[in-house]
View 1 (tube, helix red, strand yellow):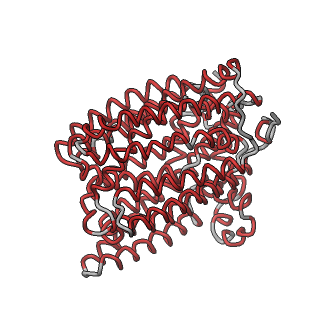
View 2: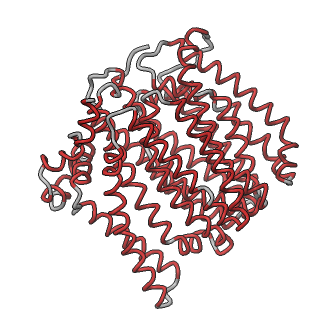
View 3: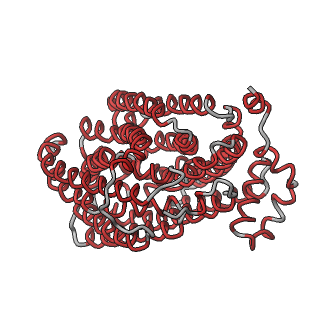
Amino acid sequence: MAASGLDNPQRSFGKTAKLSAVWDIGGRVAQQGFLFVVSIFIARLLTPADFGITAAARFFVTLATRITQLGLNVSLIRMKEIKPEHASSVFVVNLVMGVLAFFTLYLASPTIGRLFGSSSVAEVLPVTAAVFLITPLASVPGAMMVRQLRYRASTAIHLLDAVAGSIITLGLAFLDFGYWSLVLGALAGTVLSTAVRVYMSPWRLSLRFSSSALRDTLSFGTGFQVKQLLTFGATNLDNLVVGRLLGVTSLGFYDKAYGLMRQMTDRFAFDTALMRIFAVINHEPDRFRKALLKGTLATTLVTFPILCFVGVGADELILVLYGSQWLPAVGPFYSLAVAGVLKSAMRPMHAANESLGLVWLQTIQQLAYAVLIVVGVAVGSYWGVSGAAAGVLPGLLVQLAFGVRLLTRNSTVTAGDLWSAVWPSIASSAAMCAGVLGVEVALRSLGVLPWLVLLAMIATAGVSYAALLLWTPFPTVAAVVRESVDDVAPWARRWVAFGILRVRSQKNSDRDLDAPGPAAKAKATS
């Protein structure tokens, strides 16, 4: 198979990474913006119980996905060179595992319905599981597009999935289909996006199978998939515990809060692109360190202020957008916003550890994390859905500590480096949210309507954070913003010329991220 540009380890990835990230994040912003608007109407047409039923079914579908994919697609992305038989063998295995997953869930649906005490869950699950007969067709084509960093095409496909699925869901909700509108809308979006991904991918479906080629992908893939399975458990077993202990209505509130948090972390991260780039340059310690720190800073500069804002304005946000019936979701969202901050800070670090081949050590980490999450949520459930949400935080702190230690022991990156990469985002987000909180308190005291308070908070956040980026006191932020403008939107240079380009010189702005600190130098020498 012909090598893509990314298969050449001597190529400079800076501009490629930024362009890929821009398309990836830009697409996610557009996708989530659209989904966010549509979700407002859907939340007013459906009940929390409707969302709880589909969340219960989604848990088992996602679990089956984690079990059956075996991590082979990620192996295709990570491998420096692949042959046609690698891709076709992975496709055959994905196809077989998808069929097995569908029939397993179909037969298990009555038992799962009894577990949640809901016959509706049993009815929904077989239809939801039909996704396993569809997505294997696009698994390898999607992996090949990621491998080549074809994020423009991938972005268009994800956006198509979101738009088509949401429109169908909204239409069915208006027609009073209840929870079936969520199930059928998601399935329709998957069918359409799968067909487009197969059409646009350079790889064509093939049933050629080679056991030796499959073995080449299994070593890393199996470890990665075990880790992903445990990650799934750690991030979704809380749903199972809440649904079992507190019921599907409470699960609906919890799932709404968790979904908001996830939109701000998973949807605005570009760790898939980072992992591919880290895998190519991990043999160059200085280059690897620089890429990791810039990736971490860029990720947190996007996610921290959003999470901070929605945490501060959760009351107005949920009341105005979703209605008073969803106010019980405010309590759990406070804790889950903090969880989102921790998750978004860890994503580039996890991608770096995976690129270094430390997947089995990460698996041990995820096992401990999953256990802590189940215990924490079960204990917290004694205080209701808000207590259950707070129960996820101890496990996340342990996971963060373990991940930092794993990375610092296997690379020249130090804990101080990682702190220096996230501190500017913490400080900038805190400054922005202080202003937002002041506006919120002042307008509330005056008895201003909630929707006007929310608009004022959004305006304050946007203006203040833009100013913080343009006139930042942090050289590292200035460097990342300036480089991003130079590589992605050179036409906008004059708009930032009055800000960061006049605050820091090129040399001083680049120095902090480009040059290893004293600890890193000593570590590299040893």
